Length: 363
Ligand code: IPM
Ligand code: MG
Image (cartoon, rainbow, N blue to C red; front, side, top):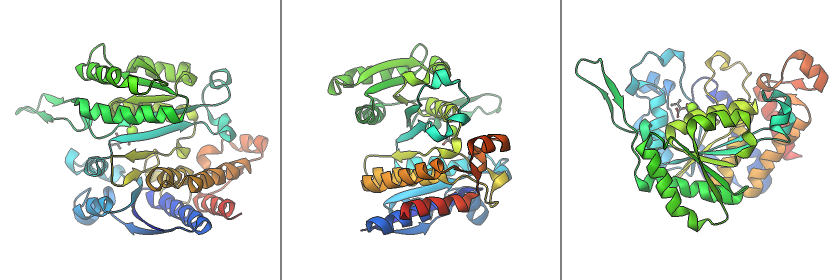
């Protein structure tokens, strides 16, 4: 079977890592008899430079007509002074909204080979961390009304959610919990926000359909604290767009390896949008220093969620584990020279890391 993948390499290290992701996909395709055809599209800073727009119409059209979209990263200091509507980040929001991918799955996983990179004490981490954050992605304050008064000295951004928007993302939360440890925590600010009270009402209405899932609620300030105090209490967290943005960065840091974490954004039908959760790291772009593993693991999510290719996804994940087991590390996960000597690990660049994953897939 041939699958059509839209590629958005984007800015900074985006092209470096997307290239390695495609090599891993091709290797897995060869092994299991699938082929992937890629079409590249512009979005972000490079699109602003080429067309004046962060998200050209042809990009959104091409993405919506594909089977899945793989995105590297967008943004960089060059475009930071542009007005809001012309910034590279606008491309991300335009893609998310335009593709209607309302559920953003962000697993925060501590790889056992990288446990020394985890900043939490070992008694807190126990034998590992494995949390899934489900972030609502096409509503809330990111998409609500915003503006300024005529004098420009007063501004507003609005958080709004409909019961329907809440229900569809909660459903993904409940279903995800069923596939994991059957615990779902709705994170909100229901002591203050009316939208949060609606989230709770909808969750209460729905919970009877997932009797095996243990449902709980937590205020976001407490959740931020609990993530560092006792992260192992969480299985699946489901939350609004902005709270999810903030908590997923925190969750990624407690795993110590943001260069390893993947994400998938899904809607009801139509292609999913897949991106590593790290940014464009312009300072190391094109220098063969970026860690491609988050993107390679993102390709595994793409195979699993968009194409239903579970064996193939697992093969990529096993190849990454093997490379880590063998001691190969890019700079971000390598620790100091002394750590490397102590652990017997070896420092490699982007391309070599990609080669190693391909070799593990071929073996
Ligand atoms: C993320 C990013 C984006 C967001 C930015 C770049 C617009 O932080 O994907 O988490 O806030 O959603
Ligand atoms: Mg973020």
